[in-house]
Length: 209
Image (cartoon, rainbow, N blue to C red; front, side, top):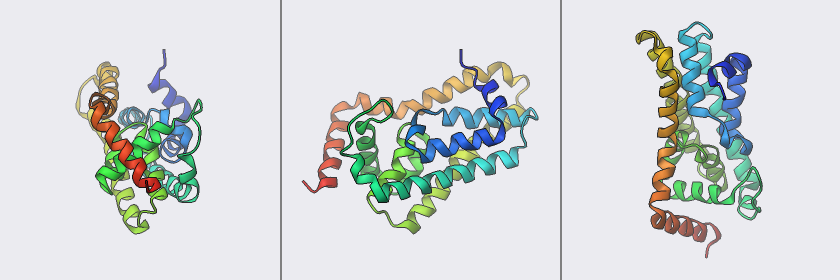
């Protein structure tokens, strides 16, 4: 059984930063446990494993830089991704769904997408592909990064410091975070017709058809 807490102890502070960067800046990072990773790392900081300030600020910097890298990638080669065939680590449908998400919510999508696994890494790529104004992108990137990276690490830290023996409930709390993370995607699947129309509309707008 995968032990997230022990894995974080093993990879250390810079390992956490690397995973956060990968999940927000690299295509291969879409399957990484971002939300639960940040929360659990924050909890470990409350137990003295990490210092909360370097942890939270480092995660914040990693996710902001990751999105900058993803935006640059999208601006350079993003459009070609829509023509790329599916592979083991890439699903075109996920990218198209992220584009529909971006089209529907605009700049807010970059903030909301921070809390949606799978969409998280693709949203800045779509922003780059759409040539979103870089100043606006920077503002929402910093704001979303602060809410996500600093917010979740400090939430884990706060719970660890205020609730006695919270480590007994860490697994259920992490499980709840995972459920809440996939809930938006589950809602989209449940509203299949609405999602399909949004995706098709996004594709038509993207290719001018």
